[in-house]
View 1 (cartoon, one colour):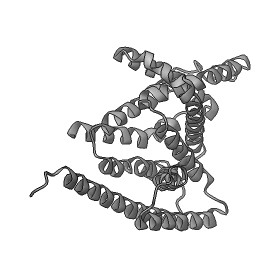
View 2 (tube, rainbow, N blue to C red; view 1 turned 60 degrees about the vertical axis):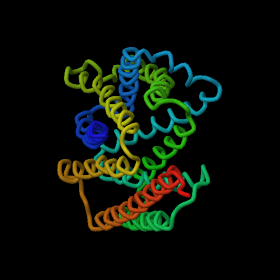
View 3 (cartoon, one colour; view 1 turned 180 degrees about the horizontal axis):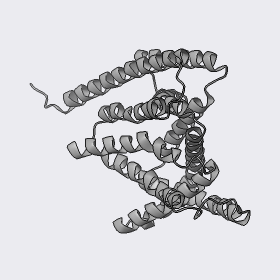
View 4 (cartoon, rainbow, N blue to C red; view 1 turned 30 degrees about the vertical axis):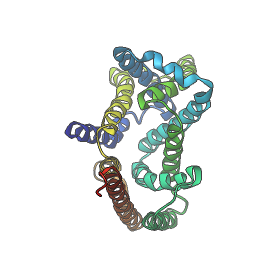
Length: 300
């Protein structure tokens, strides 16, 4: 249990501080960073699975029942990765952090739409509060916070697709980047042919681009390890560490503007998440009690 909590905290800290890393690559176009992130992620995952003797399990992802699910997952995660990298490079990291705050609420709504799940009253209240926050932020920005909404929606749809895949998280992500790597290679070759590539132009940039693979893979492996050892409710609460760190980095380190409208929207999102988390903890506690009652020996 303790090792699992340490693993999920480490994963969320890496995710939450990754914006600092990608800020150092702001001089590189986001599409080029994404291409390198994809290729070096595959290299890292391939090494990990080879060491574990599980490289052959990736073939299951390309069976007819899984193939199109992997394609959709690859599309969703690539859009998510690109938009996150781009938002950091153009000084909109605050909006990106809001997207990952909104994600749990979007996931609940998708669960209702796709899996016909029922929402508790407190969850409905949380979603309505979040919707109000989006309206306030839209009024303040003059448009919908499309970065936040797209990040939340693509990650939510990615989660829905992964739920339908009977594959481990590391194996499925490896298959996803396998799908994306041919496009990444073609794009990088084009950049080389037009003398637009930033790879090898400087040692620092080259190292940062290569290390984007381990930066992507390591927290996922840690999170996968933790998910088997830590209660779902605990995982859910700790995961808020990721967008919180993103938010603090954006406002305190990057010094991005943060007006009263944004402040009000974030406060409402934090309230919505508190209500949502409390509802989740109550549901988990009720399930535990029901499970304990069902497993207890009957008394005559």
